Length: 98
Image (cartoon, helix red, strand yellow):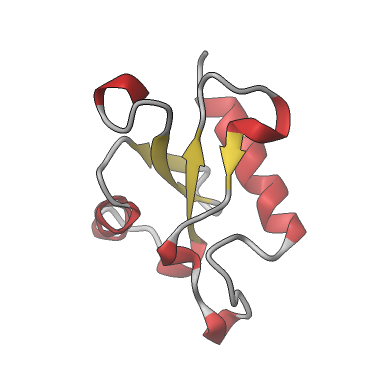
């Protein structure tokens, strides 16, 4: 899938409440909009990148403009809360087959 878009990565948006995600759009914002239209709450959605050729912690990158949410305490493009990062990694591991 990565080879068809960005070459070495896939973009995804994870819903940490519903434990689902959408993968493979040009922008995280497009994936976020799709999830919201499908009933997800915006505060439960987090943008990540997958690097299919990498292992361990390098497989998931927490970097997306949709993650910038100062109103809920996330002041970076990453995911500042370690508990949310852990949820994202668990959800991604359960849904991604490599």
